[in-house]
Structure formats: structure tokens, C-alpha cells
Image 1 (cartoon, rainbow, N blue to C red):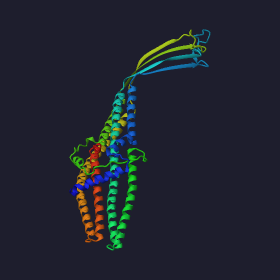
Image 2: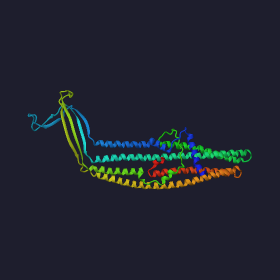
Image 3: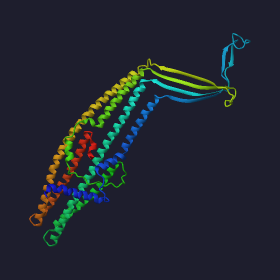
Image 4: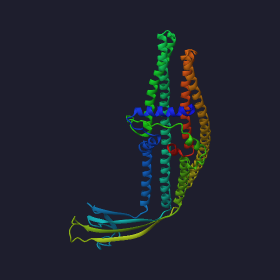
Length: 453
């Protein structure tokens, strides 16, 4: 089998075995599963969904304000002193001075009234516009939720790749550690048989100690990055999270991204700004609706009782019915030009929002072009790094063989080991660069959900 095909296969076998060995026999979480879990548990998405619900309830509240408003009411009065009334003299009492004033008490000390009021909005331009604005606001928060979901998917993907990148570096060090252990055994045997110098044996031991220290540091870094991934996913950091083996050498999906439709209309951040502009337009119309008249109908049905003492519960007590219906018309005439300047302010805000839209569109276009260029360069660099890795493997194997045959100094072996480690690290880093570039390109076109397909 050619080495060009052997290296990726060995990478997958070793890496897959390493991840499964850390778990309990299960394959672990794939990127798709991490994203699905994050979309269910992330606090920002939960808050955004609550804002959606709040907007829905607001729309229903506005609808309710245009429906019939029915209320019952009651009123009990106990006049300790009945209100006095003044009338011209001589009207009720012939003996009083016609030029004077008679003061008498009209009414009885106690009264009770109960009834129903009905109000119905007949016409209000502000109400009609408010309904449209409430529906648009609901759509706005739905877009915000979608945009938040995109951000969470992107963050999970980058942190997922970060964990995988660190584990790949761990694999790299462990692979070189195994090679040095074997080399140490060979040199130790040669040294014991006076075929190698002690300084050569000590140099290999120093390299081994350095590698073991780097491995310990990477173990800590893996745990730190895994914990941050859990935070983004919205799960407790104490949760065991094992990641499944990931086929980073499958470049089909990455290459397909390069020929994807560059239409940026699917970006939710641009759609959110469009919806904000629509809301601002409705706000201007709502302010102008204050110039329109409003019409409301009303009705009142009530029963009244009067008495000198509290005997309203008596079955013989007389109750008097009252009722009315009517229409109320309110016509605005002059408000001191308040609405005029409110409209002017709203138009200024709308113009500012247009500038925001323009900048967002330009930023989106630039982000796409940069991501596209980064993707092409990353794929090209990956091919170069893979070739370099194959060459480093060959050099190390040949140098090791020459050393065993006594035809090459130990310095060449250690140098080739270092070069191999660096080549493998560069190859692994470039693999991650390709995947992050793929995420950036999907994000720039508003298709980040495809990252896990």
C-alpha cells in the first residue's frame, strides 16, 4: 500500500482508537450530535425562544384590545350628610323670601347601583397598524432566534474542532514518544555493549522527558477546551463528554462549499435588519395614525336603589333600571406639532438603519470573499502539508535504519524525529484550518447548519 493512502488510514485508526479508549465503549458524540444537544440546552437560545413567546402574547394582547370590552360595576353611597342644594326662595316654600335663597337637601342618605358596561372599538387607524407591527415583531424575534442558533452552531463547531485539534496533537506526541522509546531501547542496548556513547543515550532520555511534559500539558488543555465546549453546548461541565472519531481526510464536503451558491440573502443578520426597517416604517405610520379620528361604541345597563337606611336586600325594595347606548368620536385637531416631530425623528432613525443595512451587506460580501479565499488556500496548503508529512515519515524511517546500520549519527535521527513531529503537527493544524475555513464559509453564506450534514 502506498504511503499516501497509508498515513490517513493510520491516522483514523489511531485517533478513533484513542477516543474510544477514553469512553465506556460507545462511539461518543459526533459534531452533529453536539450541535443538536447545544440547540436544546444553550441558555441564549432558550432566552430567544422566550422573547418569541413574549412577542406572540403581545400580538394577542393587541388583538384583544379591539374585541368587545365588557365589565360589571357596582357603587354604594352612604351620605352622612346629604349634599345641600341652593334654589331661589319661594319656589318650594311660599313663605320664604322670593328674593332670598332656600337651602334644601335633595336625595336620600343611601343609594346602591349595579350594572354592566360594554365598549367596542369601531375604528382606529393606530389599532390596525399595531396589528401589523405586532405580527412583524413576532417574525423579527423568530429571525433573532434563528440568528442565535446560527451563532451557537458556529461556536460549537469551532470549539469541537479545537478539542479535536488538541487530541490530534496529543496523538502526534504519543506517536513520536513511542518511536523514541524504541530508539531508547536500541541505544541502551548498544550502550551496554559499548556500541554507543552515554551522551547519545542521555540525549534520547532528555527528548523523552520533554515529550512527556508536553503530553501532560496537552491533557490539561484538552480538559479545558472540553469544558468550554460543554459551556457552549449548555450542559454541566461535570458531564462526561466523549467525542467520536472524525474523518478529517474526507474533503468532498469542503470542496463542495467552494462551488456553493454565494447568494447572501439567507443570512439571518441581514434579514433581521430588513425586518427592523419594516418595523420602523410601521412605527412612522403608527405616529401618523394619530391624525385620524377614532370611533368607539358603548352601552350601559344598570339598576339603582335609594333608601333612608340599608334595607336593599329586602324583597320589597324598589329597583329602577337605567340604560344607554352611544357612540364616541374623537377628532384630533392640534397637538402642538408633536406628531410632526415624532415622525421626523422616526425618519431619521430609518435613515440611520439604512446605513446599517448597507454596512452589513458590505461586511457580509467581504466575509464571503475572505472565507472563500481562505478555503481555497487551506485546501491547497493541506495537500502540501500532507506531502511534507509523507516525506518526513520516509526520512525518519531511512535515517533510523541507517543509524541501526551504523551509517548515520544519532543527531540525524533526533533531527529527523523533530522534523517528523513538526510535520505531523503542521498537517494536523492544517486539517483543522480546513474545517474552520469551511465553517467560516458556511457562516458567511448563512448556511452554517450544513456544517454537520
